[in-house]
Image (cartoon, rainbow, N blue to C red; front, side, top):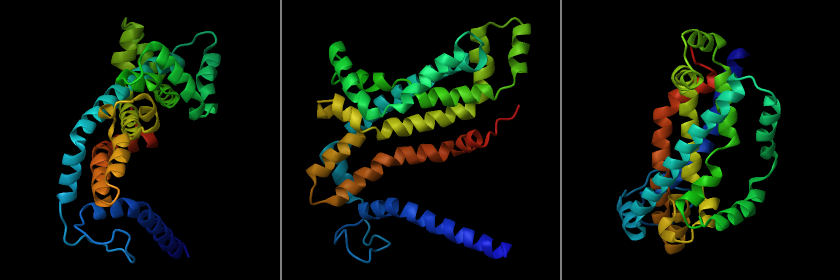
Length: 271
């Protein structure tokens, strides 16, 4: 019976894996097809004849290179600020005892109960008062630090034994030195995980850039893909090629960083 149960478990897992992978495979396959009905049934599993013309056409016609640069700027600065601010806020919440710490933590976590959509109007009006509409600063600033990042880094700091901190203080180290040179390097897997999550979040961010940016030349890839779709209404293969080009950097990042992510999730930091 245990053997049969194990086989059934693997069968169910394989089926769920295939269902999860199929949409991505279908998009990738379609992006390499030269012609024919995109929605034919049953769908073909291998594009034949395969061609790169859809990628070349999508890249040249919509100038995806410019949108790539916009996305790199937004995702790069957004991730950098988010990780840095999360570390700065999380450290005192995890390692320093001060009066009202639990209240501060509660107030930080409280906005998680508010739907993101409800904050859009307030953020938009604030940026308009500051004159930051249609700027990258306006896209990045409202999300330069997130509750998720603060909470994740706080939990990572809490996992570091107190003895590291005490030993550094005995040697005469200051609080800033202990934070940046002693404790923070010990949570590198968690920081790497947060970096990956943030890059994916910023890379796929669609609604807020669409609201803030009025100049289409400043759009990130996520918004430009809709622009691409409306431009090529009868050529879905161009759109499929654009989608593959948009998600490819994120997939590569996940592949290279998956070791850190697994360690962080499994609590694999060894002291």
